[in-house]
Every structure is written in structure tokens, then in C-alpha cells.
Image 1: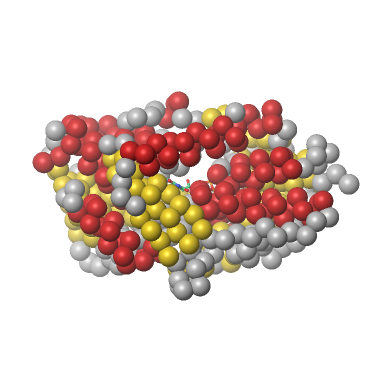
Image 2: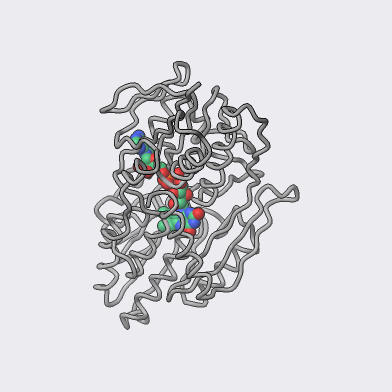
Length: 381
Ligand SMILES: Cc1cc2nc3c(=O)[nH]c(=O)nc-3n(C[C@H](O)[C@H](O)[C@H](O)COP(=O)(O)OP(=O)(O)OC[C@H]3O[C@@H](n4cnc5c(N)ncnc54)[C@H](O)[C@@H]3O)c2cc1C
């Protein structure tokens, strides 16, 4: 019997899930993807826009490319999820029923939670704001650049450190670096808590060598015209502020009762939620790793997408599923000047997360470019 698989969100996870399902299911089964956006751009491209090697307008791939691949794409806002009725409401398309649901709606950024941030700082994770941030950096002749991680967890934990190194290389090229200080403020006691003290210390060494200062235990409270105020009672001056706003699960997910606490809890091996035939993947979920959580990263969203898709495919085909999410992944940590380190981790290691960081190289940067190119091609072109 024909089945209808509905995927909410055409980001990293949603696109990977749709592709996997379409590859393996016959055309009698429908794969439908809903997203409010008309195009896709991988999160890591934001750093290339900051660096100046990409422009926003040329980095977005239209989502209607999905239709040519036999995946039905609906450009719409998801407004309600009713798991008891097996249906989802979209603003223009009304109620859509499903046999299987994959929730891949990502994390929502909430800059409004930080008093005074709007209008004074740039959201480092907002593609529209990065060109303006870049212009401000190019115009700055002397002063202070502050990068503030405003809440935990946030997506791609190394990204603020990558951004600091890219900003260092931009200012060096501009000839202004010696007159500009760069500071990173973070709420956590170490740079990358889930990666552990050793990798955190390697990252701090890496940025310190480029005269970038790291301030742990500095959770921002508010922003004024020239000062950052922290919950620990201290203040700092800034001229240009790049912030990573607090994250939360999208409202439509929380109001559906899918989120337990801040995020959607799932079985860490199967991506199943506690609701029948409902899977959740990627940034909208939380998988506990000891007292911390699996990092929010596209790489994990993709792997989880494949596992969820495989469970659905096998169930429809009457096979037993052995697909399991292993909690292993990697990323390329950029250091500026078209070089990147390679970071890989095994987060479900019984003895605790084990990670390895390689020295930066041009080859790793090229692999990062391939990482983006091959996926966009497979998913949308
Ligand atoms: C600067 C930066 C650098 C990064 N670098 C890396 C990296 O090098 N490697 C890596 O693995 N990850 C990286 N990431 C993280 C990665 O981008 C995310 O973890 C990944 O996108 C998560 O995928 P997702 O499918 O869960 O969510 P998303 O990709 O965010 O997709 C969610 C989708 O849901 C849609 N949506 C949300 N709510 C609604 C609604 N109500 N109605 C309709 N549509 C809705 C959104 O429009 C969006 O398209 C980076 C992120 C940033 C910001």
C-alpha cells in the first residue's frame, strides 16, 4: 500500500532524509518536504561569506530542484503538528496527513533574549547579517572586535573560534590587525565542553597564537552602545560585536508536545520519538552524552537522517532494520587563509567522548569545499 512520508524542514537533515527515502522507495510512495525557505545554503558557507570567498546571492540553491528528483517540495510554514491525528498543518496547504513523519526543523535563534543586542551587534549565524558584519570589519581601523557565545547549546560549537581566526586573517589582509583586538566571550568554563579539556585547550592555543583572547565563564547579560555586560558582573568594551544568539526548538515543535525540556528527546540509536511513526533528527533534538549533549552539527543531522530513513524504508518493505546511529562524526575547523583542521569524534564511546584534532592544512580546506559541493549536488541539482 502506498505510504506518505512527510518531512518537516529542508535543511541538512531534511534533505538527506528525503534523498535517502527517494533512492530506495518506489514511486508509489510519496516523499513530501515542507520548508518556509525557498532555497538551501549549508551553515558552513556563512563563514566563507564572512571570509569574502563567497557571496550570499550565489550560495543559495533553490529547493524546487527537489521536484525533479521525485520529492514533493511545499514552500510553506508549518503551523501545527498533531501526532495523535497523524497530521501537520501548513499555512497555505492546510492539513497534510502522514504515515511517517520526520521532524527536521532545526534550532531557532532568539537574539531578542539578549537585551540591547538587536541593532548593536551582528548575528554571526544569520546569513543576511554576515555581509554587513564583514563591511564593518573592513571599515574598522582600530578598536575591539567581540565574539560572544550567548547561550548553550549552539550549533557547530567550533564555529565562533573559526570565525575569530577568519576575522584575524581579514584584518591582517586589511593591514589593521595590529590596531584591533579580538576577544571571544563564552558562558562555558572551557572552549568546547563536549570535546573535553584537551581539545578545548588545543583550540585556545590555536587562537592565542593569533593573539585572540578567550574569556570563559562570561555569559552575556546585555549590550549597550559601547559595552557588553556579563552575568559574572564584569563589563567589556567593544566596537564591532558578532554574537551567537541563544537557541531553542521552534515554537511549533514545543507546542506540539514533542519537546521534552528544550529539545526533542529521541532514541539515540533509531531517532524515534515517543510518538508512533514520528522521528526527529538534527538540531531540533537532544541526545545526552554524559552530562552534556551531542553537538548540533549538520554531519550528525545527515547521519541521523539516513538512520531514520532506513527504518522507514525497511518497515515499508517488511524487512528488519539494523540501521543504528553510532554518534561518530567529523568536521573541518577553518583557521583562515583557506586552511582547515580536521576534527573527528566518537561521542558514544563507552569510556566517554573521544576526539582527535589534526593540524590545519590546505587539503582539509579543499575537503570541506567538497563536503558542501557533493551534498548540494546530490540533494538538489
Ligand atoms: C556558521 C556555521 C557553520 C557551521 N559549520 C558546520 C560544519 O562545518 N559542519 C557541520 O556538520 N555543521 C556545521 N554547522 C551546523 C549545521 O549547519 C547545522 O547543524 C545543520 O544545519 C542542522 O541541520 P537540521 O536539518 O537539523 O536543521 P537546519 O539545517 O537548520 O534546517 C531546518 C529547516 O527547517 C525550516 N523550518 C524551521 N521552522 C519551520 C517552520 N515552522 N515551517 C517551515 N519550515 C521551517 C528552516 O527554514 C530550515 O530550512 C554550521 C552552522 C553554522 C551556523
